[in-house]
Length: 158
Image 1 (cartoon, rainbow, N blue to C red):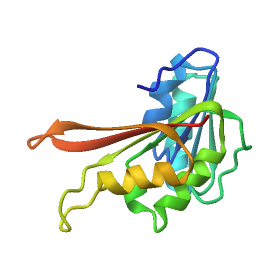
Image 2 (cartoon, helix red, strand yellow; image 1 turned 180 degrees about the vertical axis):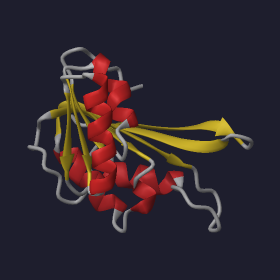
Image 3 (cartoon, rainbow, N blue to C red; image 1 turned 30 degrees about the vertical axis):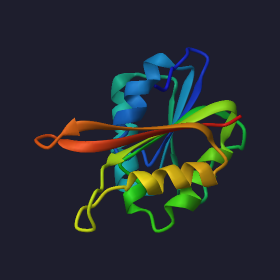
């Protein structure tokens, strides 16, 4: 869905230990991972150093105050983060500001279908993407009851 290209600049928001950033790195020009946890960033930076990757940068920052220029990112990933944020709609809007025209955001999180579960309700994610003025929104549910169900949402900036 993300349709990565070698000339893309990617962003991994809430990068944690850098797993998504490192997976994306060989497929794009550059990837910036951002996290507000210094211990997690240390692990991510060690992972980058060990890999020898030269196109990955790990930065300290928050979803609501990203250290990324507006209109500079082709694809932004936000994996297993929004359920932890107090204002997820504001976070999605802030991530969308970093996107170039034609850019896209890919959100992946656990699926929430009842009030007792953690995760994201599909209707909420759709609303957050629309509120950020993203278009061509798609939502998919992946996984099963044994491995867990995940909600993947994609939105594009015109």
